[in-house]
Image (tube, rainbow, N blue to C red; front, side):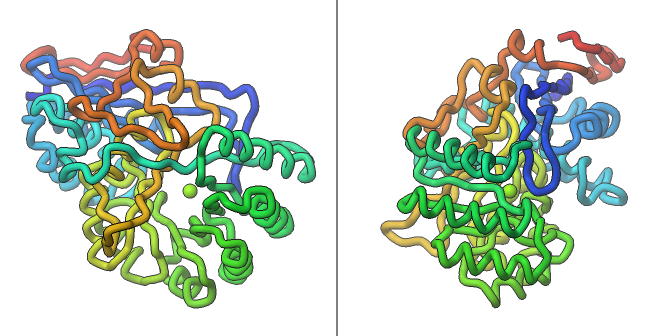
Amino acid sequence: MIECIKTYRLQHKLEESFGFSQWHYDTRNALLVEIIDDSGAIGWGECYGPATVTQNAIDTFYAPLLLGWDPLKNEAAWNHCWRASIDFAMKGPMMGAISGIDMALLDLKGKLLGVSASELMGGRLRDSVECYATGMYFRKQPETELLETILTEAADYVDQGFKALKIKIGKNMAFDKQLIEAMRRTFPNARLMADSNHAYDLPEAVEIGKLLSTHSYAWFEEPLSPTHPALFRQLADKVDIPIATGECEQTRYGFQNLLKEGGVQIAQPDLAYCGGPTEAVKIRAIASSMGINTVAHCWGTQLNLASAAHFLATTYVEPGRAETAPPLLEKDLTPNPMRDEMYAVEMVAKKGTVAVPTAPGLGVAPDRAAMKQFCVQQTEQISAASKPELVTLNSEL
Ligand code: MG
C-alpha cells in the first residue's frame, strides 16, 4: 500500500548560460518524486516540464488519489490518474506529473518484485546501449567565435569516444548552414544529427533538410512545429533524410495522431513527460504498428537517463534483421550538477556506451545529502492511515 508521496523541487544556477533556437538556460530545474509503500520500499521518478507546476499537480491532485493504492497495480494507477483529470489535462504539465509518478511506481514495483525496469518493460535485447552526445548549444558569443566553440566541444566528445553527435540548429539560416557544413567537414566519419527544436517554417525546413541530406546527417529532429503534424508529411515528400520528433508530444493517443499523418520516421517520447515509462512502451507499440522506430528523448537527471536506457535495452528495432543498427541513447552532456553530482551510482558513458543498470527497479537513486544542496521546496503527502496531513518544507529535507 502506498503510504507516502514526496516531491523535491531542485534548482541550480549555471555559471554560464547556454541556448537553443527558442531560449537560453541560465538555471537547471528538476522535480523528483519519491513514493514509499508500507513495507518501506521506495520508488523514484522524475518529471520533465515546469517544476513548480508539476510539483503542485502531484502534491495537491495526484498524490491524494494514490495514497493507499497497491503499488504493484501501476498501470491501473495510471488509468486512475488519467480518468481523474482527462477533462482538463489530456496533455501538458499535468501529464508530466503523471509521468514522474509512473516512473516512480515502475521503480518501486521492480524493487518489490526484485527485477529491473527492463524486465518490466518486456526483457532486455541488449545489456549496454550506445549513446549519442547531446550538447553543442549556443553561447552568447559572436558567431565566428561560437562556431569555433561548438567545434571544440564536439572534438572533446569525439575524444571521449562518442561516435554520434547531435548539434543544435535553428539560430538563423546562415549560421545553421555554416555549422552543418563545418561539422561534417571536421568530423567526416561521425554519425551526425541536427535538432532545430521546431524553429523552421516549411520552406526553411526543406532547405535545411536538403543540406543535411547532402552532408549525410542521420536525422533531422523537430524540423517543424508540433502544432502542425500534417506539415511533416509535406516535408518528408521533399527531402531525403529521416525526420525525428515527439519530445513535445504525450500519450499513446497524441502519438497516434502525430504518426498517422506520415512523414515521421523516428518517434521521440520523453519518459519523464510522455506519460511515463509504461506509456512510452505503449507509444512504442503504436509506432511499431506503423513501421516507425522509437528512440527516447532524454533530458534531466539520472532517473530519466536510466529509464531511457532500460527502454532502449528493450527496444526491438523495426523491421528486424540479424545485423541491425542498435538504437541510440541521448546522453545530455550540458552542465548539470543535479545529474552528475547527486547520485551515488551514476550512468557514465565509457567510449560512448553506457551499461544498463541491473539492480531492481531503475537501478539509480539520488543521494539525499547531495540532493539537499539543490532542494528549494519539498512536499509530502502521507496516507490517512499514517498521518493525514500535508507538510510543506522550504529548503529542508
Ligand atoms: Mg530535441
